[in-house]
Amino acid sequence: MKATVFLGGGRITSALVAGLRLAKYKPPLVVYDRHPEKLRRLKREFNVSTEQDLARAVSQANLLIVAVRPHDVANLLDDTAKCDWAAGPRLVVSLAAGIPLHKLRSKGSSASRWGRAMPSPVCRIARGLTAVAFEENVAMRQRKQVRDFFGHLGSVLEIPEAHFDAFTATFSPSHGYHALATLARSAQAAGLDRKAALTAAAHAIAGGIFYWQESGQTLDELLRDAATPGGTAAATMAAMNRAGYERVVAKGLWTGIKQARINARR
Image 1 (cartoon, rainbow, N blue to C red):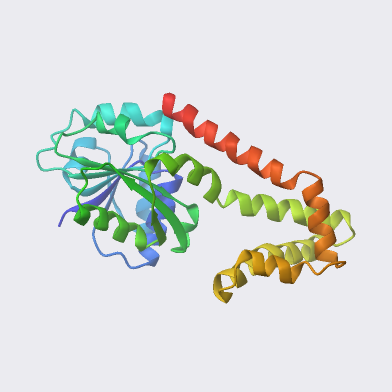
Image 2: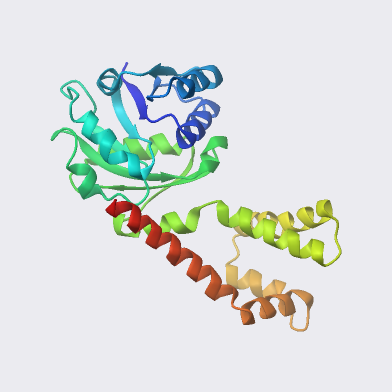
């Protein structure tokens, strides 16, 4: 049976493999990496097959996933171009932020079809979110294969490639962690101990979002209900907006988008 092959044994591969094992994913998993210590760890933790020979890894792939850092993609794809793709993958998906399909397409076999995916690290517990995009010549059955694969790890959203950088800057769990840490520190400064501050802040962020997802209410409705005129929540949100809360978030997103575009030019 052909395998799902990861080129790169770093953090994102570890997260995806963990989620796939949790989701009882059946097809064989193979990880290629130049560093034997990474392969030993993945084999020990997740019982995946490992490979230090790039050509052998490529030849086993039904679905080939490029899972290295953006600045390593060009060299890796140059090396894969030396492999015999005759019996290798027809479908290749890159996880590298910022590197567009037209650059990826110039590498590998002319018979291969390319897609991009941006999976969240939360895929580790099979509750993640993955954006996918494809070049135009990718068949519907191949698109479904990719969506089904990432569907084992949580929700999947197919979007135009032109939207990928904005999605990447927006969907990172770092926003939640950053907001949680910031809100908790402010609560401590207001007098709460650390445990109480984290508990309250986590409920405000995670509990509120969970309720929005489950209730069927719109954000406008929830904001209106929460912000009773003259109440604590209304005063808090108004002060945050006056201090530039929305402007700061927008600046952060645009900086992330610019960084993705810088990565694409490297």
